[in-house]
Length: 196
Image 1 (cartoon, rainbow, N blue to C red):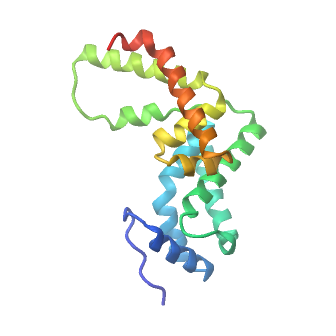
Image 2 (cartoon, one colour; image 1 turned 180 degrees about the vertical axis):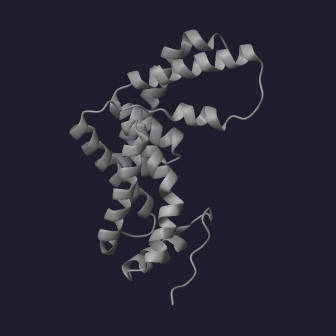
Image 3 (cartoon, helix red, strand yellow; image 1 turned 45 degrees about the horizontal axis):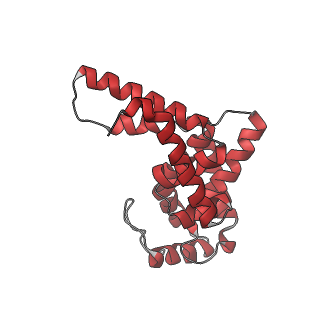
């Protein structure tokens, strides 16, 4: 009988992840289901940021989990699981992008706006919509690698080390991409934000 899996939403640490990897290695389907519940939103969100399609993003996230199961005996040490899943999503998304020649669309702002529940005045809503549209446009204009680095760090909460691993670059290169992307966004958005 398998050990109980921590409830979804429980913060994981290296000990939990080590146990999950051990159980994956023992062909435990229950832990795979737990990992899927724990990481599903992040995987779909990242794929969506790269592909701009919810259906394609869900397909990619599902395929990443299938690959995790198929390669369960080869995942590294604890701490590697999240990076492994994000790398899989990135590779699969890039393949999907190339195959279908889709345009990457990091529409994370729509999710941020949807989470905003504070009531505001109508003129404030118009300004926020205008600013959100300007941010989305500025994000789309960023070179793909800079946009991807910024989205991983700022919208998906990965550390620079984790994001660098996902993108296959050094942490310094990742930091340079994020820094340059932020500078370019500030310049693009200067007209919308006004003086400080």
